Image 1 (tube, helix red, strand yellow):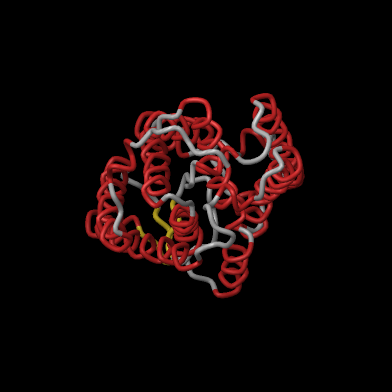
Image 2: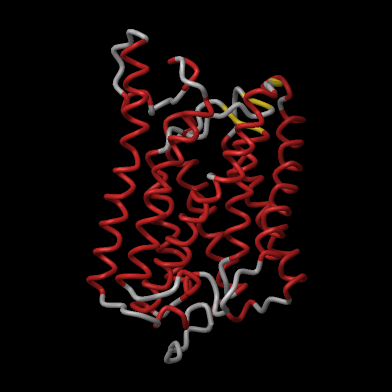
Length: 310
C-alpha cells in the first residue's frame, strides 16, 4: 500500500528532476542566514577564517555566538527545504503529503511516539556502554538558562529537519525509484547511498574518518528504509530519526559533530567504530521488538509485484 501511493498524481520523470533541483536551491537559500551570521561573528572576532572553513569543525561558542542561535540557524535551511518539498509535491506532482507517509488519511502518532521513545531508550543504554568503556571523556555541561531554549528548539523546529529528510528520502525518493525499478531492495540501497552521500560533507567525516562515518550513514539510511518497507508506512522512521537527533541535541553531544548545542552532557571524544557496532546492535533490537509488536512479515521485502493502479 505504501508503494501504491507512488502512482498517485503526476509522476513524469522530469518533475522528479525539477523537484530535486529546486529543493537543492531552497536548501541553499536557507543556508544564507547562517553563513551570513557566522561570517559576521568571525569578522567581529578578528578571525581570518571564512564561514566555509568554520563549518569544517563548527564551534559557535568560539566565535561568540550562542549555540542556540547557531543551532536554530542551522535548522533554518531544512525549513526552507521542507517548504519547497511541500509546494512541489502538492502543486507540481499533484499529490497529498500524506501520500508520502501511508495509505491512510491521517498520521499514526502512536507509531511516531513508539519509534521516538524506543530509540531514545536504546541510545541511552548504548551511552552507558560508551561511558563504561571510557568515562573520562564525559563532561557535565548542563546550564538551565541555555538548556530550556534548546529544548523548545528541539521540540518545535528540529522535527522539521528530521521529518524533511524522511519525507524526502524514505517517502519521495523511494516512491520515485520504485516507479522506475520495482525492486524494494534496490530502492532501499539507492536511497541509503544518497542519504550517505548528502551527509558526506558533515564535519564528522573529517573528525572520525571517511570510511567509518560513511558506513554509519549508509547503515542508518538502510535501517530507516527497512522499517519503512516492513511497516508499509513512514511513521516509525519519522519517530526514530527524530529520536536520533533529539538525543544528540539535548542529552549527549560530542565534539566534532555537526550538531553543536548546550546539551546536558558533552563527550570530548568518540570511538566511531564502537558507535557503529552499537548502532547495528540497537537497530537489530529495534527490529526484533517491532517485528513482535506489529506482526511484520519479512516476505514483504521480496514482494516486487507491479503496484496497483491508484
